[in-house]
Length: 358
Length: 273
Image (tube, each protein chain N blue to C red):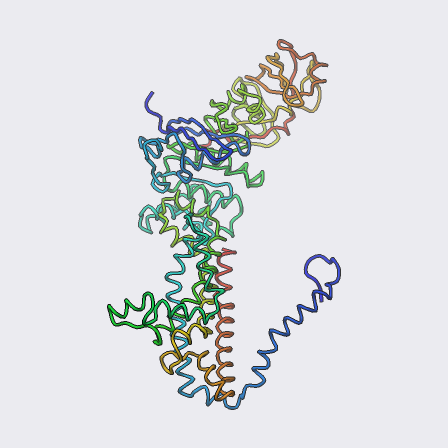
């Protein structure tokens, strides 16, 4: 395999904290960095951006060494060609949306007209071209974050860093922007790094998930694998989410194996459908309730998990269900048991698939 | 009188009374000044050569001082607000000293530094034949000395109030620190900068102790408005009253103008934009 586009070994030592994370990524990859608060996610992003010096290790991107303390190499943040989207947006409050987006090209020496043109193009791509002359205070949270994404992308970054870009938004707004983000991340030809503490973001937007816990990589793998086979209890808690992929038509999603999934919210095209393990009910007989999604499957593992029991089934490519210990005992759940799993349509969230919606 | 916010009870007399006293104490002298002013003579006095000269000198020197204060004060404020360097708190303390120093002591200190036999003044005199004290330039120097701390503190506060993360944002967008300073930090600190300018100007306009000590009191070259008031008070109290009212009017007028015109615009700009 050729040299990875991004090759980073980020070591940042601070009193009481140590971040030591290896990360390699190829062009076009969208890596979700997930972990609890204080795990070091933001430190990682800031170190890659060059606004926080490494204690040790190295950062190489696009064939250039950005930082290597051992050899005294350090490229300033402004010469790294990174794009950054912050949780709070951080649009310059005294500049219009257009000027915000044009700021990067202008700083890099583009003449004003060319910078404005490029900025307009990006605002258009993010669907906020009509807001070009507005100041950030006149934008809603979702609009502001779209402008922030446009601003980060306008510099044509080799490394796009998104630090919890959706977590300050209302649920509905976040869902809409998540869909949009999926498209832009898939279209970005550098490496994208998405920091989140929301498993949904990680599993719907990323091509790879890096779980960081207590300053170290707890797991690194494709979203499905991390969700289905979390390496540790901690990872399971973080990314425990059922994600099914398929093609949506109205409120029905045709899954990869040809079976149908009923959802409450209509969608169209390639989608990911997510629901929490706690939303899955298990029965020994075929259920006859309001739950419209039912699958028969064989239990593959039963592990205690916090105050509940996490059950893995081989249905629809692998399902996770959380049940209480008494239920588990009553159902006699052991590997090999055949059970029915059911999920109400209203428990399912539908999201645009990472590579879809182009 | 109603207390602001939720109705948590009557405002205690123990607090109200001293507050009213303070207001009365601050307003009474100004009212008295207006009451005692010989208004009939105002027009004549205003156009007298001595007053015009003092007024002109005060305006020119205070504005010159403010210009210098802005040119060196903004970078100093920026360094204090944005750079981590050893001895920063010491530097800040040094900057604040002239603020609490009696102005007359400031004048003596300036003489020790720039006087004909001063630390810097002696070599300056020997090398170039330049002597600073008792010149119009000395008035400006005295003004700068007393006004700079006000300005630096005000601008530093404004710079600190703007989110430092904006510097990070600008850096990731490829901006140098100089570009960031010009296009982000300074505009965002605009209202504080303006307030600092006004404060510094007001301080310079009213400066008396350091000026008279370091620059003297010569008509036309160093007799600023406060110096003129001091002189007149000993010979012609009515004239002192008129001059005082003029100085007061100029200060209040400019403050009011700035408040209405620029302050509001600038503040709205920063907050509502």
